[in-house]
Length: 309
Image (spheres, rainbow, N blue to C red):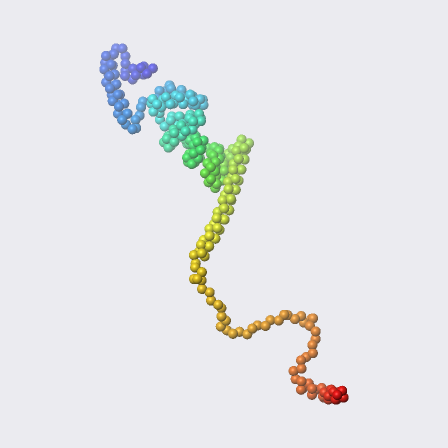
């Protein structure tokens, strides 16, 4: 078949064999010169791949026979240097064959150059590359590809992507980002998916979100205790740095000589027993008694003393 194509390309026929041979050698020399220049060039481009083999590889790929498709794609890529789209197919074949390291090798290289393709087709490549990194436990490398997939995928696919993002953030102990990712996962599952179809995954997302919130609360409590201890240690350090002899104390002196305040207990006026008034003017009182009573009590007392004596 290759000879037939070459004959057709060079215009071969039996009537002009000699002329064609001359042209053949001339064109062959040009092709060889071109190939030499291509080898020296960094951006070398080869002839188009065999269309029959390529169609066969694509047919295998579409029928999910990824290993068979991979063998043909590898053969074509080695011979013809396939374009970025077919090399992305190779990455997908490796991904479906669980050869994640090889998948990331191809997809990491070609996905930045696939911006001209349809959005949803790109989302397939982004998601496969993110999943490959995820399976290799390269969670930080997986995150940007999940995020790129979110920008071009369908809404009913975003719930699952947010769920995977939540796992990546959890493995990195980024609890707030993980909680937010699971919250978005719940939102898109409830809005764009049938609940019975995603009930198990939705339950997992809810439990994961609650677990992340518990971790956040625990971290806040630990941080609060740490801040309080840091403040206490700082105050202790300041107090320890001040020498005791530099602390000046002065005895308080009352400059105003105030009278002492005498306090007495409160007297209950209801329970107070009546007392006789104090006689502060005995002479006047005596005179009053003399006017009232004709008997002088003082003289009577004196007479009594005399009698006893």
